[in-house]
Image 1 (cartoon, one colour):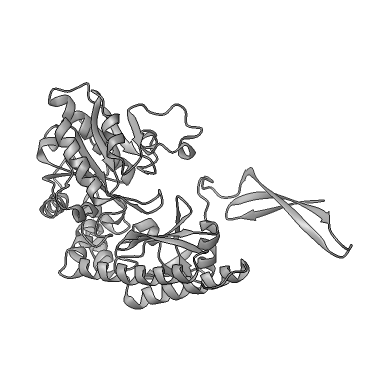
Image 2 (image 1 turned 90 degrees about the vertical axis):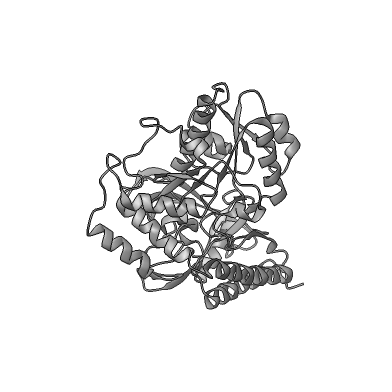
Length: 437
């Protein structure tokens, strides 16, 4: 037995190698046990499972690592770099605003925020916007707004939210409870009360979960972290009708699936007459600059009177300049049509690969440029293999591999990605002893 220490991206590991004799003294299987120690060699906390890979620049859907190797980025910072990397409109807007004024606080008017709010409400169901810094913060604001509205309209007893299994709403203490996944809650004490989970798609279960304390419903039109699960459009319509029937408020979490990612500005628009009362947005809203938003009808927004909610950084001139630059691109004629075309190109190609290698990729999921591959092997192993072959992706729940390229991805980029995915499937099939069917 040998004991040694090694380091990987800021964390020291203890490695124990145990010799297990097999047939013949010259042949040995090696059993390796790796345990992460508490010794941290980076000043960063070890809460991320980072790949030992760093980038120094990017352009479009491509990133260049510090060693000079180029990677096709189909993770987009977890569906966040909506305009890709080094987009001239976005970087130009940020630089120009930073040279003037970046932050003044919400003690004063912010013209850039006013313009952004006007544009977002003009292109959505909403009539008012609140800006914050992240998706979790946006969802916190959404829940507070629902509770506040119920209280201010004569129903202070209504404060609970119905949420859905497989959801992901963020990592604050309350949003961990809204998410309801024990994996994320472990070690952080008792769950915050007020969130009830039911299976998505089961309208009878939703109806049964309604109590006199229920204030509203929160759902992602496409569950991202939960495994790229597209919620049936008819189910969204049923939720809208159920909320109207019971005086509940409907909230959509479009942090990952919104801002054009499905081929429409907002994912719920595919359902037609199923608009929410309030909606959260973040990730791609500012192309990678930290920002979140709560969009709501005036019937709710009017109850956030001065002092009821706030943020120091939210909606500052720099963040709003970035978000306005993103809207300049996303709202341009033909842009969302192109997102749909690239999404269909990818889906058609992925379905062909899945047909040829059904033991590697069992199903293609998603909408537009938020797609998932249900994997046969461990999705993390497929993710690593793709990265070795030059394609970046993101793991999701249910052993799904997530593909969420920048919205500006080109036809050639998609062809290149499909080629890498097929090449990787061939390698896995060979190693597993399978072949194309």
